[in-house]
Image (cartoon, rainbow, N blue to C red; front, side):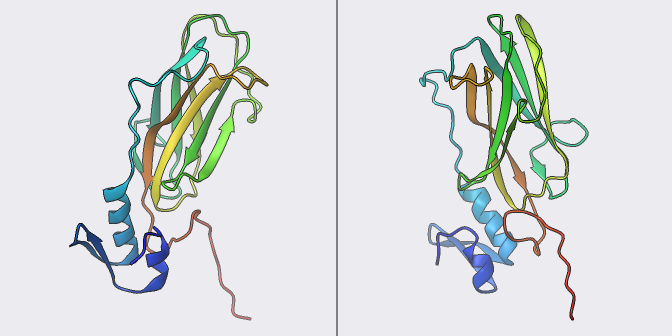
Length: 192
């Protein structure tokens, strides 16, 4: 018995997953771990009474996870193309701004993060209306898991944000039984 999410994969076969004193999974390690993650994934619903995060000149009014064709998606396999699209609304003129995204796994480890500034993209001045920003993540190397997306908009070189949405959307990655760890790498073996 363990609470370490990936430890059973390395210990014994076959795996039996217990929930509330009942067998809820029985079989290969990847299947048992997948069942565990799906059953016990922690959703952190937004607190409707929470104070908004940021100064409000810009707000993020929509976030979508996309597949490689640009359609909404929520489940992927290693090697798929993934997009994160934000809809940003201006409430006051903003001469310069930065848009960022971070992805964390189910144990809250930062898996990836970037922003328009780090990518060398200068976003145009924004005074009214709505703009869409899309981050593209080609050939994701992540293995089995649930990944939460946080997004933010802020001024360049500033510590205060215009707006941030923590863990606003999530997606899952389903990997093959032979893919363990946190990233998918192409491995080879030579006998010398």
